[in-house]
Structures are given as C-alpha cells and as structure tokens.
Length: 101
Length: 137
Picture 1: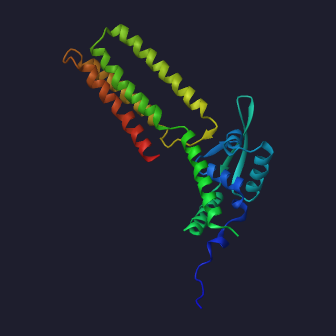
Picture 2 (picture 1 turned 180 degrees about the horizontal axis):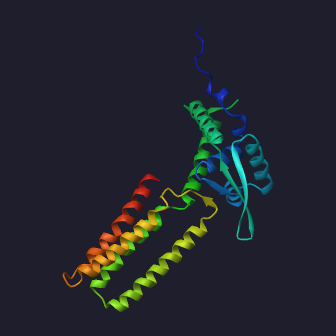
C-alpha cells in the first residue's frame, strides 16, 4: 500500500471560509480594493446583522479589514481583503477545484 | 464531508458573485476613451464650421462629458478600485492637448485640415491609454 504524498484536498479546505456567506463575501472582495457595507449586503442578499456577524468573524481571523468612514455626513463602512485573506481564499478555491476534478 | 457537487456549487456561486462585482465596478478606461473619441470628433469641426459657434459647441460637449463622468463614477461609489493610472496621466494629456491646440493654430492658413490633424493627434494619447487600460483590466 502506497503512502499518499500530498494531503487530500478536503483536508485543506478552510472551515472559516467554507461557510457560504463568508466564501461569497471573500469572493466579492477579491474583485475590488474595498466594498461598502450596503453593496455587499445587497449583492449577497443577506440582512445587516448576518453580514456584520460574518464580517466580524473574518476580521478576527485577519482575512478582512473593516474601516469606518463618511461620505459627506453619512457614515459608511468599508470592507477590504487582506493579503492573508487573499492567500487563504486562493488556497481554499484551489482545494475546491481539486475536489471537483 | 464535502461532496464534488457541493464543491462545484460553491465554486459556481463564488464565480457568480465575483462576476457581479467585476461588472459593476467603475471602468477606469472610460473617461480616457471618451475624451479621446470626443476630441477626435469635435476638434476637426473647427475646419468645417464657424469657429465661434463651434467653440461654444465644444465647451458644451466638454461640460456634458464632465457631468457624465461625475454621474457615472458617483453611481459606482460603493465599489472602490484603486486607479492604475499614475497621477500625472491627466496633466500630461492636458499639456499634450494644449500643444496640439497651438499646433492647430500654427498650421491654420497652411492647410485646410489644420484642426483635423491637431484633433486626431491630440486624441491619440487618451485613446491609447484608455484602450490599454481596457485590454489589461
């Protein structure tokens, strides 16, 4: 019996990113420098509280940054993928593709 | 345990979301291509029409183009994408266009196509840069 030289892609899936909303959020953030809270919420079709909860989880993991700012007098919240987040997303997508292949 | 079908569904959803963001993010090349095309189309008009009248038409088109740009980028302000053009791109294009304006004036009287030549020459840098941005985005 041969010993596997590489781990099965399933073992390389990132549990934090594998959650569908968090995965979609990171996929969206991978295509822009920053996305505003309401745009993300509408694109992902989730509620404010759900988006906030998942954004906090990703922020705590160091995968995204959350920046509060203003446009005129209106408060705005901007989300951006960190380098760690981009790398983690890439690894996760690679593992998913290997699973599908 | 993640099945192949689940993995494929997840990849498809990720691609769909990524495409949605890509389709809705501001296109940096648009003002360059727009300015280039308008310059190439409008400036030759100085060879064809009354210059005073055409000057007002040019100013009106420039203002309309500026407003269209503001409305376009304003409508997409929820998606921030860093500009890839260096900060000096617009100043350099402006200087080039002014030089071409002077060239048109100098050529005027020597040829009937003075402003046609100047207009097309002025349009080349913004058009070329805009098309390059579009190709590489």
